[in-house]
Length: 415
Image (cartoon, rainbow, N blue to C red; front, side, top):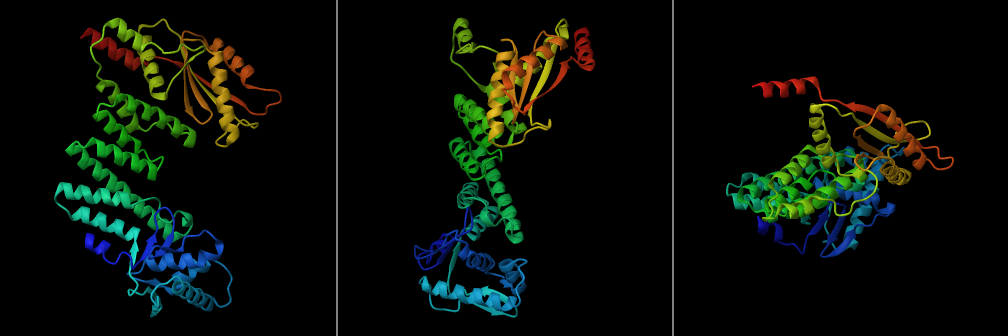
């Protein structure tokens, strides 16, 4: 298999489909520019080189080259594109052969000019991994497949139907390779390589939750502080980019991180000092969503004893018509201002967490519904400036220990 890939490597047309399109012959770039004058040549090459085994029908080729443009003689136009492509390939130094052959309405790439396409190599590695029985060799093929996938398939052409189909297929294959490689690495307890794979998958396919692979590896290696930092950075990134909350898998890993952290022997006074805030800031306690969730659940349990009045408030940035703002530079600025306004308006014992773009949760302890309205007015006073047309919308719910939960606890006590 390796010989197949390396044989004639210098005298072949190297084709990049992942992460962008380029052609090179003997180290010299044939195409890779984004100029619009080259797009028809690129479309033709992408089709023919990717489908070089089965060929491309003339109808499909014309449809991709000219889309819905009104051309009087579309067959003549297609022949012109092919003719110009052949001239360009010859000028680039390729062997003087008939590069594009046509048989019974099907266009084929001439096999006399060997092709080394990253997408085809990727599939070869995937197939080899699936057939291999030795775990080490299987892992090697999966890792090589992952490293060959360097980005989305033809990302500049995602509006083209056949490209979109292939992009989905390759993305699914890549995800499968990562998952299967992770399973093998987990069994062999090679957590360093597992971390590297998680980092790579995250860089290739952001916002796909591959950080969980890296985090699992860090926890397994006992690198708890690195795992905690990765978690916080990931949560911030997901909020900033998509307004997304941590995935269930990420939350599970974060919970496991808390149970697996081991510390050296310390006196209680030293432990208490480490638990305390490093810098006690003013205003409410701003924390990550998982920490907020833990505080909420603890408060719920404390309320089982009764005597407390707790409210959960959602603060959301809205436009002049009262609709939630979804994106844009203005939202980023307003989100920062809202955070500051909330922190300065609530008490030191109240907890605050960012929930999404322009959204914050506030847990108000030992307060009343009337005081919630007072806090909202304080936030508005600090948030609204001059004739600002945007504002904040508030939703408030009382935190109540459910009767079912209370009965379950009482029954447990009676038993």
